[in-house]
Image 1: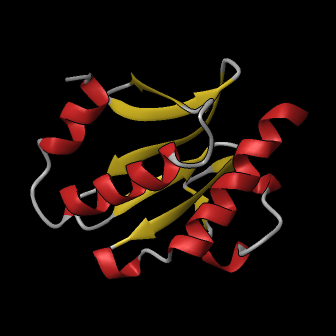
Image 2: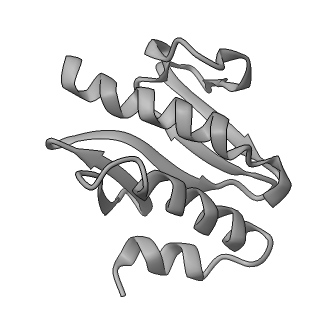
Image 3: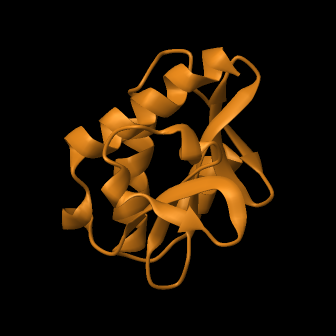
Amino acid sequence: MNPAEDYILKKPQPWQSILLELRFIILSISEDVEESYKWSLPFYGAYKQMFCFLNFRKTYVDLGIPYGIHIKQHTQYLVDGENRKMLRSLRFHTLEDIDHAIVKAILTEAFQNLKQR
């Protein structure tokens, strides 16, 4: 088992289910998406660049997008990144909070932005 998957599987429910669902969406963006484990968190990237990460934060799961400031669609769902200028995130408190179409659209745009950096 890889460390990123291990991180997810060690979380209690319902957080584990939320993390697994988000991981599935992230990995479905492109066959070029690579999963890694840095700074004790699952990170996802391609072309030697990161485009998102997962983080369990006691009362929610954070799907962080390091260059989220460049996202143009569904911005009403993005949360500013705690004193980090570029970071935006999606936060999920329940599995039902995950709207696949919105999450996939935001992640697809973040992934496509990799090529422009």
